[in-house]
Length: 193
Image (cartoon, rainbow, N blue to C red):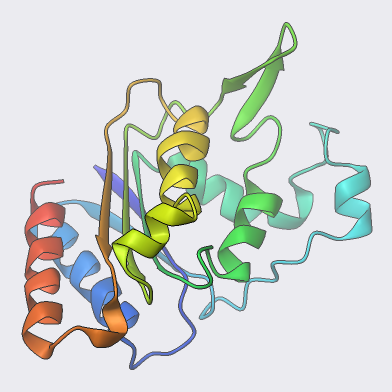
């Protein structure tokens, strides 16, 4: 299976970077073809320009500034997102990727006034993430990142595609042993992906 790994963390020595490397190696060991898209490493510009917004619904031209990213997304059979959660949201660079690449005609279309998914090529979705806050705090604010993955992104991919969400909450207070256990869990989940 061709897996697009979407990584969004600016620090190469972070635990998020270790998770990213674990995801890549485990997917490759399982025999998957991996397309590694490091948004910071690629210097992705998350800003939706005025021109892009004005042409947002122009299906013939709305992908011109992000054509390479659209092509990579459309060639993938599965999507794995590796990202931290900051202030109970995704990093701006990842939000900008969704704004600029998950476009009308790419990730969704309007049919009879209703949104219909376009990314039928994405047959599986996984999110690997860390939270600075506890699971309870995330729950109390509605856990928006989990909802984006399990509800919003679900509406763009193949209907009934399996979605897995692997989160380490309260990361800043976790011990080395707890972080290593989460890395091992992620390795096992990606090997079985």
